[in-house]
Image 1 (tube, rainbow, N blue to C red):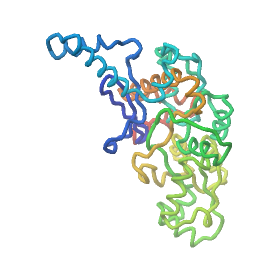
Image 2: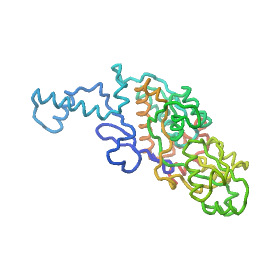
Image 3: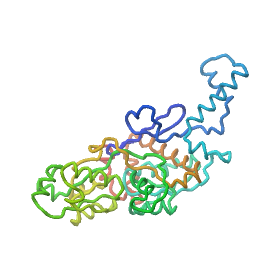
Image 4: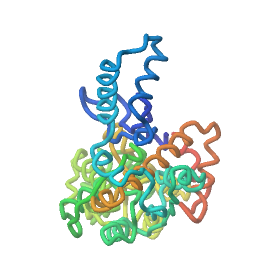
Length: 363
């Protein structure tokens, strides 16, 4: 899946699906998540052995030999399954989801696409669950509702999950990342007022700030989130101390453009379509994209609490399966406008198709 450089990488070795970062993973590293398509509870080792013989044209094996192969086959298959699933998924002899209806929170950003499309296309039903996408107003709201179990899972900032897990920027609670939803696809926007004064990149912005002394305000979306990381790093890399030379505030993604329009900030870091919206409204421009800062960086994840994964392991697995299939649909979509049109609806991102379209297609 590509959203202004966002990537979902789907692979299917050994009848399994897993999500991994684009590019070659480190030698010997495990996939971020492994989902076995076949329910192992429905397989028996005799069938596995017979299938192998059919494929290879091998002669029938002796009973003793067959038992060894059967045992090895079972052990091999189980090694493919994530430890969480091995421990709990079939504890009661069934891989049926324990919880049939799940609320998955999201923020109005185009990288919520796979969560939304899993519901819209009814892919969730294929895996025995019903996903209810729940639109949230801010990342703080997502954090609080995850911690309080008002949401079962969420499209959420990579860094937010780790912040909650460590007790930074909010209450401490053990959390879990079920899968990575996207890489890349965020950007830093600077106001046209600064551009008109010659600030067209990092060095020229730093020069302007030294020349015209005043309080410069920049916004990110959550203190432990990725947008804060990109903004701090980019400013510092260009000689601007984000803790001393600028004022950095927290603003929810959908409110970035309105705040820049009324002069509350000079720049911000956020996901799409809110960088493209600033250009469309002629109030700002994109000075850099986050993939220019760190190529293929992790961005949004499907996050939940550790408690949820232990209580509902099969439901967790079903959510991952449905969202992975939605990602594949978006990847293979010839006309990307279908998904973009759905996302533009007021129920989701609430903007115009024109604002989403270009960056949705990687422009």
